[in-house]
Length: 500
Image (tube, rainbow, N blue to C red; front, side, top):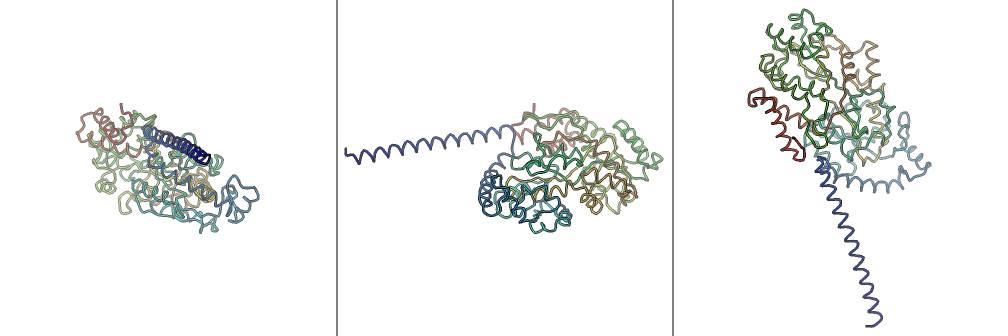
């Protein structure tokens, strides 16, 4: 064998060995990734399967973008202080924007929501910072905020990337943890919003939006609940419609049922349907629906099933279901009251009904909340400083939030703004016959804690509705059967959750 051939064969052998090593490394890396993904799924993190592909896209996109920004508008940790100052000067930072200068770039951002509400609230940001209006693209998807269609549309936009990449996602209370629990969403600390900036937020909203000890989102609104009742029925049955006196009649569930008896004797229903009380009970849970992949049937769940059945069987309601035509008809018929929150008062009581201009509110048996919208920032956001400024302005700036509350009737998530409105005598409502509800809502919001929220809540709450209706109608003969129905539904949808 000649010397040249020996050299050729030697090189070929080395290449084959190197190829085998690389192939082996890639195989084990792929296998490790696959096993990790399987482990995540089996631990109940369903969102991983849907969000992980997007996360890979985001990380790649961010890597490419950072490379571009090193030559166009430096804003990464690797750039010098002088380059950072040049980048912030390019977008002419001023006011509170200076708080977020470290993360500011000259890139535009897109904000996604399901309707026009957040878009309308952005008006208050544009009024304060008109220089940034052209850097924000608001996308109204026109979908149900709690629907799978909304989730899929957000995911598709994330996967598509480009100029329409979702930098800020608006999330409804019922599905907020679907988004917040994902690593795709940054913490507020990561975008520069610190605890001193959120000190005026109602603590329950911070509880709700905290995941593994980190705040993942903020809301511009708080949605504490109350009991809204007809003044003329209160006068006829209790001799007064003063909120303090009516609260005494409804201060706990024993008082509530005693009042229900009085109303029934007088020909009235205390609420329209048995499920009207569910949000009050859900917010009294001492444990989350799911923890460590195990279903928890809290005592508040069984108490709700029992109380709803009592209302149904006892003739204390019209046996309607929430939001049905028959349920809505109660506003002009024989219904004494509805459990409703801040937005309920202004946008759910028909103006032609017997309630409108003839009702007041009190707390009722327990504090609770109903609804809310939260803003979170995605990992691939190209201008985290601007995203932070938007969220800070709408969710932390007291002056802006106070004006927003006056002009939109939102009960804002800012205790100082609400205190200012109360002390100045603002907040009287035409719907409530001139009564000012702010003090009741402020007290209710301060009495709430929502540390037990999970990504499963909306779905399992739906299973609870189904079980309660079946128990009320007699399809289930006992609470045990109703609970078994909930467990069966959970097992069908989430087979990895232990329901025993």
